[in-house]
Image 1 (cartoon, rainbow, N blue to C red):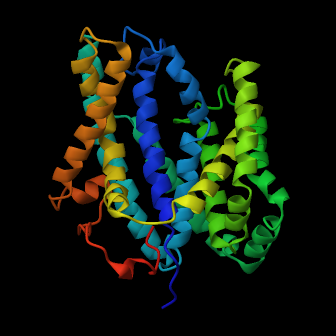
Image 2: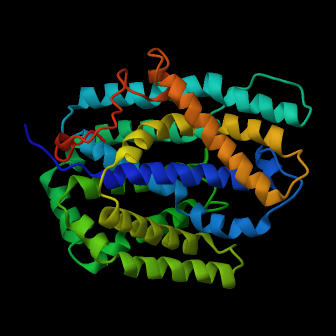
Length: 364
């Protein structure tokens, strides 16, 4: 059986991206418009917090789609089409359906209770819209698998990324998307056609660059500081000239260079495993599914306190992570709950050093 070197940096990327997503969601509650998008809103705003969050906002969702595409490329190396669809159905579609029926309604109840509204059961994708998109992308990819995995496609993807001009491919694709779709806001991803197409571009690009030769990986590792410089310069333009409200065209290009930078830095410095990664890579999915419940519960308890607003932000963030991780500890010990939160039936989290993990078929 052919073996592949495990890419631990992809696991780290997924964990870090979900961590940033949760921090971003908590930060929304301290913005003066949070309630407009059905977040519990603090009466004390932290508007300066939105500066770093605005930098995150152009890449935090696309990078998750990008990493998902990379994960599918690895999965297809040891699974046939039927096996891939079956696995993604159990690990994505099942938690998605379960979540919109039983998870999202809970944090909607918490929102309704906080604002003294009538308690109604509401079926909605909520923050789980991401899972629905991913499953759709997998089906679309499977339909075009023969073409996308052909030698000619792999050849041209590898060839394009032999030189620094290959660094322009992703930013240009994202630019084309916003020019065609013309979204109301580049950051408005959830349940919009812009979010669907942008996510599919990132997903497909992650798949294609992982499914071809290693030219892309070497390119972004060698040029990570150049792409960081470009991304930082574009953010500076957005901050100083446009006061963060830049046109979507600028944000699209910035998003592409941030993603290249982050993947390049991760591949260079995070391609190693430790006990923390073994644990967090398993916990990340259930934590993502559950975090809105604990975030709103934490807001209900903490926001009324007469303490500093930033202290409230830190306390709600800690409460969200802590509650979600404690719930993961419970869920992973109950067999029938595990598939509902995207976990495999058997828990293989171990904390002793195992040299056999250094080289094995990738199961990302």
